Length: 115
Image (cartoon, rainbow, N blue to C red):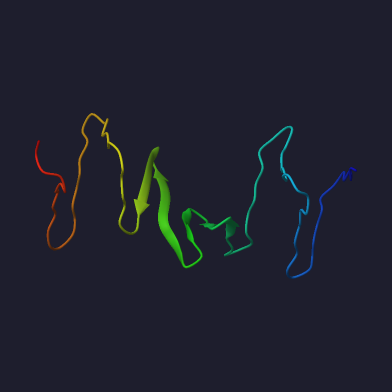
């Protein structure tokens, strides 16, 4: 069963919903361009438990865990909180730096004894 719409589909109620009740999957696709999902002015978009608000990624109770910015062709990722890394970190820039700007101290430690 298909519904063909040649123009825009507008929903004007305060809490509109598009609901899929099938047993397999729902796909949203475009055959000739990109897809934009956007919240209203000062809004956000939730995908599962992840919240996207402008250039910030988080969850409903902490919306700015990751902030993405770009200036002069340089991309920046700011993480607000502790970050766990379970593999190697590689710095490949010709002049890479690890910079601490806190007021107290900076430490690098290992929880494993030397072999």
